[in-house]
Image 1 (cartoon, rainbow, N blue to C red):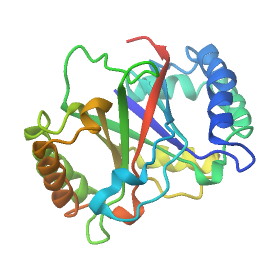
Image 2 (cartoon, rainbow, N blue to C red; image 1 turned 180 degrees about the vertical axis):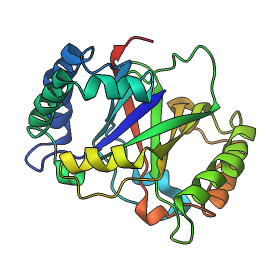
Image 3 (cartoon, rainbow, N blue to C red; image 1 turned 90 degrees about the horizontal axis):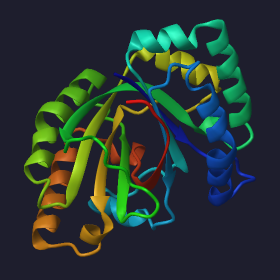
Image 4 (cartoon, helix red, strand yellow; image 1 turned 180 degrees about the horizontal axis):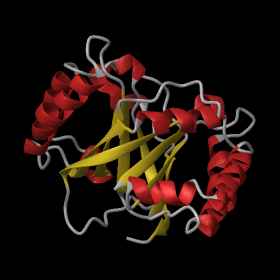
Length: 257
């Protein structure tokens, strides 16, 4: 399954609330209405919350500012995405979407990439959603590797070393679900960002974690120890100053799974 992650920054003339309202009420119906033409399997909007996200970084120090939201799109396969988006109808729809994005996004400061998922803590069925009315939140951690590491080396360490660290302590740290989402398809990613005028380098990928606010607000000794172990291992491959971390609430717009 192929996935697209699109980190969004709003136009300066809009507040975060205004941007998110337009995105959900105006842009989402356009995407949903054309989703079959684009071959979309699933489309989710993750809206950044009004939490004090600086409290998330802890020992990591200063990190990049949180984005205002994340658009997530899934296709059944790379081939399915190609067949739909490279048709005449698919190209017309992409133009329509891009023109509407200009109403609420600063496209130069937004960035997207294609990726593949590596589930780490994954209850079944895969139906956990951090809705507005639940106490669940979804944490995004878009990350870039240390300059001393190649993309391949950093992703390998992330999968084979860091993944087990988090899996082994998931229960003690209040994690309900955890996925690594690794950037791939470099040519497709470059083409997409070029079409939207992005000036931001794509991330190595992102970690996504679903948690309950109740466990976040009452840190236990086990939770504190787990956070320390996670940070110490992250420091082996992540450049925190070029990474970001923020909480979101999810809106499922299309789901044909």
